[in-house]
Amino acid sequence: MKQIRLKQTLPQVFANRDSIQSDIWHHDLTFERGKNYLIEAASGTGKSSLCSYIYGYRKDYEGIISFDGRNVRTLSPAEWVLIHRNNLSILFQELRIFPELTALENVLIKNRLTNFKRKSDIVYMFKKLGIADKMNEKVSCLSYGQQQRVAFIRSLCQPFDFILLDEPVSHLDNENNLSMANLLMEETEKQGKAGIITTSIGKQLHLSYDEILKL
Image 1: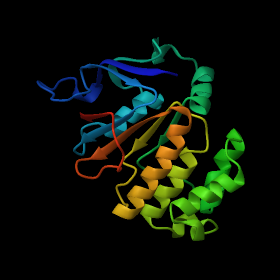
Image 2: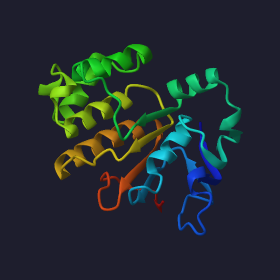
Image 3: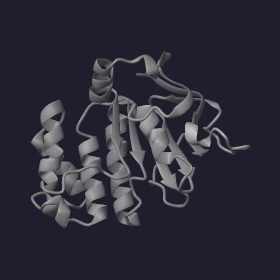
Image 4: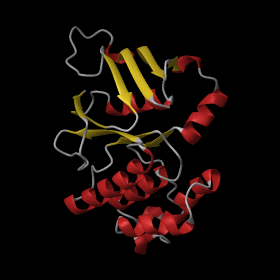
């Protein structure tokens, strides 16, 4: 997948608003593979909605979202499965990890489906993010910031052209923010992948961005 295009896209819940000031909603916008995008917004303006629309998880929007010219509304369930396996990865804001499993088990449960990373690669990522000592602890016993890092590692355990990170550093300090940014750069630079990162204003992942957009 080389491009994700949004054409006059708008959450249906915003349809009756008189005016919307946004670089994304009601615009013609293209995300290109190989570039990093930061989407800044206050709470309640649709950051998580945007990620869910692109990922195909929700369809309550107006306008068109297309992948390489193909309207995503025309994709079959089988095609979405392949896209989620090979082209799109996501870190949901609410993480969606299993509290009864250990940190490592949460990552391996996905990697067994994709066979994308070696066990040594996964251990390296845990070390890189400073949570190697938490690998065998149940996620329910970890802080939210530690859980964010587990979910981030899991999101890297698959091939992708675009990765959607919904407020990935909301509970991380500056040092851990930089560690996550460095790991993401390692992964995206290997194959010219792209990152689309949402953030609350003033709490961004410390990357070099090709474009910063206001939602």
